[in-house]
Length: 540
Image (cartoon, rainbow, N blue to C red; front, side):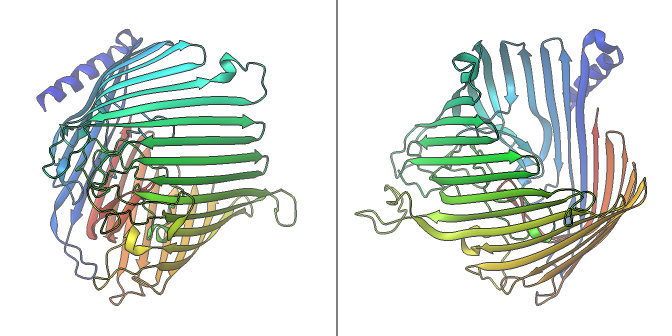
């Protein structure tokens, strides 16, 4: 704490003395949440939870120095290992147009992240940064190289495993195809981890390597992207300690013209969990990232049954259509009408028992045989239709319809009802939203949502009313009513917030349902709660 106080006062001094000593930037956040017992939603009373962090970045010519101080007090379930305070992230970096050297903590991503992606998300409780050495260089025009060595952050410690990684991106148009109208980019990566074998039952590999190759083609309005990864056998807690190799392929294509956008994605992966330590679980020590092939939802009821990525095996497709009905037509009206149709489905991979095994995925074996092109059982399917219509300068409408199927026994996206999982949850969700500008700086927003299902907790209805007084104030009130549940609980909340420049303060009082909080297919379980929530953010 004394060390960080010294750093802060030193930076303030430099900031006051202006550009002579460089410049300072950063951001900070403080969150406080209280908890009171509420038997209607199974919320427990506990001590108030405080989370805060301060990021500071100092730039002087080609040198960058940064640090992040974190503080967790009475951390909630899922974040308890972060309890405490300290400098969680610190680095020094030198960069120019040819070379970029970093010592300390850093985040990086190779391609789509199939074999390496490190990032920070305080809401999910994820910080898998690498602490070590990174070199980025441009040895010639169109060639970009990255070399990494280090250990991953594991809460307030570092993992016991050393990660080494190499990546290259080649822009062929800058080297060989300078006169081509098409754009061709290549990429290749290799990541390895070294972990001691301390298992008394099995002889485990101590050096695990993964390779990734990428190709990106752009011709006019069309873009194609191919991404393939292969990982050698990596027995772990995730795959029940089987010795099967892993692989993944992602193919995406996009077409775009004025008023129309199309995208199609195909994905297949198996046994692609890749962690610094083989016994790690949940969000801990992931080296890679599995790109989700489902729509990222933001409306309350649309997030009740999310999809969580399945690194042990999934086959998925996604289709997106964006179309704008032109202005000054019968359906487009004065401002045009936007339509978005999204469809996605995800299946398990085919798994068949191998000779000599007693079950599929038996520990100490190759696990299973699989027909590469054959699907297993359906895990998730979703259809989204959204229409955005601006009637005039004051009134805007957004309407959505969602149909989803969720394999609850596999996805386990919600708490159990009567200690039972439903094999499949079928849900239909209707959402309407109106935004009305009363005056240039005064606006109100109304949301109405309904979810219908015969499984799990049954039907929900949600209503929200928000008023904004730009550019500073907002107030809102909402209620989620689970009228299909035997107890028919209400999850009401009231909120207010104030924004001034890069500073924002919000205060909420109300109830929060238990479930999964997800971002990009990565989820954290959130307990039910009733109380106050205060959040303060600032950038400088």
